[in-house]
Amino acid sequence: MVSEGSCMVCLSPAINKCSGCQNVHYCSREHQKLDWKTHKFQCTPAKLKEDAKLGRYMEATREIKPGDVVMKEKPLITGPSQNTAPVCLGCYKLLEEGKVVTCEKCGWPFCSKQCTTKPEHTPECYYTQKREEKVSITVFGEPHPSYECLTVLRCLYQRDHDEKLWARIQSLQSHCNDRRGTDKWNYDRKMIAEFIWKFFKLEGTFSEEEIMRCVGILQINGHEVPLQEPDYLALYERVSMVEHNCRANCNKSFTSAGEIVLYAGVNIKPGSHITVSYTDPMWGTEARRHHLADSKFFECTCERCSDVTELGTMFSAVKCKKKDCKGYLLPETFILPILHKTKNPNPETRNLDNKLWNCNRCKDAVSDAIMQQLLQDIGKELRIMPKDDPDACERFISHCSSYLHPSHYYMMDVSLALAQMIGQAEEHGLAVVSSDRLLLKTQLCRKIADLLEILVPAETRLRGTILYELHAAVAETGRRKSLVDGPFVLLGYVSESQRILKESAMLLRHEPPELPEGRLFNQAKINLMQMDDLIKSLSAAQPSPL
Image: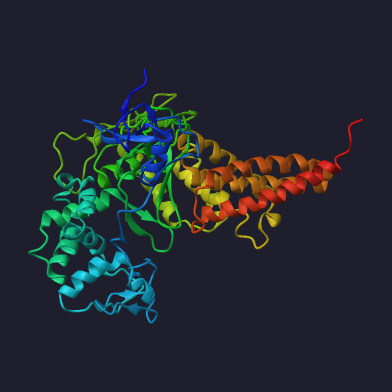
């Protein structure tokens, strides 16, 4: 049975839906065309839904294929990050002493006179003028406390100057009750709320509740936009409705203009929830869950967190040290209440002394305290390890292979760095690395790519990057083989390298040129054209079959 709705233009009964989002009806093609100028900004293959447990979330209205854009959205508010050195308040570029232009009205520093006129600057300019004393910023290149409150102030400004925008901002989650009383709440009250009251003389204008709610909205929903150094903060409305999953089906990126782009990393069926990862999916389960509990105020129980083997990858597993045992240790579950150190502890929270890690072969049990100490020691070793030294990376992997599963998150962290490093440290690239190192790079890239496809298939930037490295390693292997076995073996290697590079380019195609992944995509397009010519040349030179 076809559902009937009302035409978005004339409100008459209509059964024809927008094919893109399936959310709105039209009585005719003419009315659909007429409404497109407005609807195109809301047309997504997903609709907003709500339930008592999840709150608001997005559900796919049709099949979404890998790479399809689910939504693209302009920010409601942008501003400097809370902890930042002085930046231009128009374009967010880092400012240098002696190379600034100050706003004639308020004194805040900018990179150019043109940026002083941008509308983003209006709120702090307005309130600075009202205090009747210009701002004077004299220290550059290090975090400056005067910038901690500015993005919050830009939100507050909307209360009295843009009622609709204020309502949209206030519709977002702030978790004020969860945040209240924590160390972070007390710090923000002092450094943001009190600064706004005293510096801008707004104590009677904005209440503590209004200020701290805006602080929470930005902390819970804000996105760091990495289009330049340093990142700046942006608040988006619809993307904030997308729920978290540690094995998300979507990924996010940004356009050069600062729009957020949410696109599918896997095939998404109609009725499925649209998800994205709120944390670093390459962290272990305990680290991810603690970060989400501390920063987003919920405890993740997704499929990946609920499976101690993390979909069979053993991403958090530690080697059993019992003699002659080839097994691995994992706890019975990671889904246990998390003790918040910043608030009064719940007396019913778990007792870590009772948590055990069990071997999947010999069934030996080790206390959580011993396992945590081991992981802390390895973490310290990783932190002091030279980050740009391939030899140090190899030593770390060799040493820790006695303690950790080959796919443990610490092993993968260093393996990923090493795979990218081989060939980049040398002036002439892969052409001068040893055969052993080239083989190691190839093996690491293949292993990491396979792991990512299982664990985080929507992490397209990481997968695309590692596949780009793999294509280069395969091509260089082919070049060396052709010097020994003759030129005709090269065709197979170049064809495989091209196939890998095409997949890499597909994964990276939404990345802007300001990001390293966007620059890789542009280079991949050049490489693919060159490989096409090479394959044609090699194919033409192949001997004809008898």
